[in-house]
Length: 94
Image (cartoon, rainbow, N blue to C red; front, side):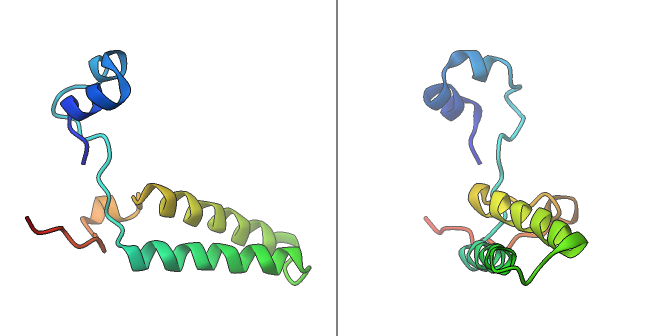
């Protein structure tokens, strides 16, 4: 999670000033395996669409899901996990 002072150093004081000190900017809750599996699933959907195996409503629904998988894999946060308090990420030991 990025705190307020890290945000100020990384993104500048204008952005940091607009965010309250207690507000967590990003909490990663996805582990490496979760991110890899989502990326592979999105890639498979893309290949199936490109080869013409998927079409119509199925392609649309799976395509939206694939885009969501790619975005969450890139960011490392799954919004569905947040309300349930789930996390597949292992905390690093000091």
